[in-house]
Amino acid sequence: MGVKNAWKFIKKSNSPFTVLSSLHDIQQYGTTIYVDILGTFNEIFVKHFSPYEKGFQNDRESCLNFLKVLSLYLDKNRCILYLDGFDTPLEKCINKSTVEYRKEMNKRKVTNLIKKVESTDNSIHFIKYGQTKKIEWLLKKTVTVTNEMKQCFLQVSCEQGWDTVMAPGSAVMSIARAANGRTVVLSNNSDIIFHTGVVSVIKATKGKFKLYNISDILYTFNFSSAALTALAIISGNDHDSHISGFDIQRNYKWLIESKSYNLELNGAFTKPKDYVDEYINYLKYIGVLQPFTDYFLDSIMIFVLLFENLKDTDGGVEHDEEYNEFEKTLKVWRSQNKTKSLKQYVFSKKVVKSTISLPLERRGQ
Image 1 (tube, rainbow, N blue to C red):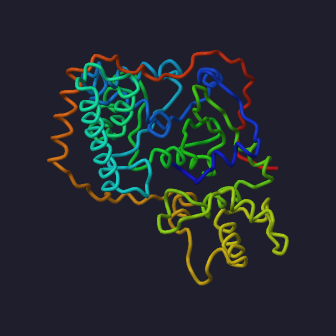
Image 2: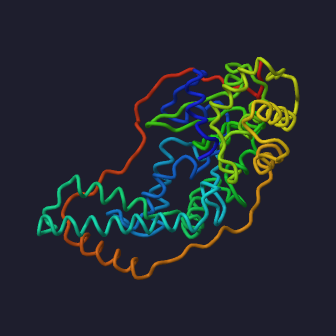
Image 3: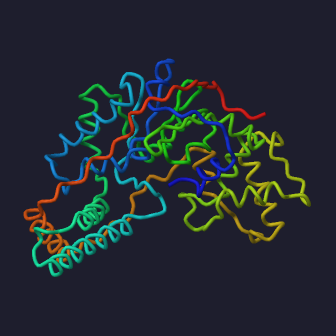
């Protein structure tokens, strides 16, 4: 989700970051955190809303339980929660029909696995924990975030005093439009790094939070902000589905090795579009791109103009017969399986002392 291999690219560069155990460490400085809910907590969100989880009651209770998890790490008075708009997929190049197909395939796998276990053990009272774990894992993949879940979360979170915004489209896009020097963005969607209004980004990973200042990343690469944004535009991402796109590491290597081509990456231009044109000319020069062809138009609209197409996605196809078999098989298995459900995933509560430095603007050298 985001620019292809961007987080790996930044990790390999050894750009400095601060490890946080709680976001309260940031908020005590008077900083507002813009939270991309589904871009950061999608797995936990889906787990709470999954009707296949033991203890599931209804969507409202799921919202309340999810908000309890958020409150462990966020002060609701100093953050704004952003939710992707209705019918907005997390991965823009994957349409709704593809998502539905994946769900149906996972339901089929669950049905087949339960039948296999029944035929092997002769009694589903004795299903091994490992088999149960696999079924539970597959069940997670049959659940997707619906408009009803989003509407419920918007209503309940506002009732509980959280400042929640339903974006017209992508939450990341709405955050990018609103971000300024006194805000920090919490998102695992790497797109957010390359929007020029964003100065600090927090990534949730392995139970902790990593705070990156964009100015440190620019200094590490000796890039201007415009040059970094342009690099994301020409790399593989969720927006130009007609272009496979090389990952950002590959493009960066080509650009810094451009000894036979006068390519300046720090301060030559002030606008990302100018850098994009220069990058395209160079990639055509070395034969990576074909001449006389327009490239990366959708990505330019997203990263430079902050404009997104909000047209509806294609609808999926329901398979009633397979769905009924899935529900019937699962109901029997649930009623007879005595194995305890898996523990809910929560972030580690280990306290890490850290020194926090937040810049007020996005700048390179």
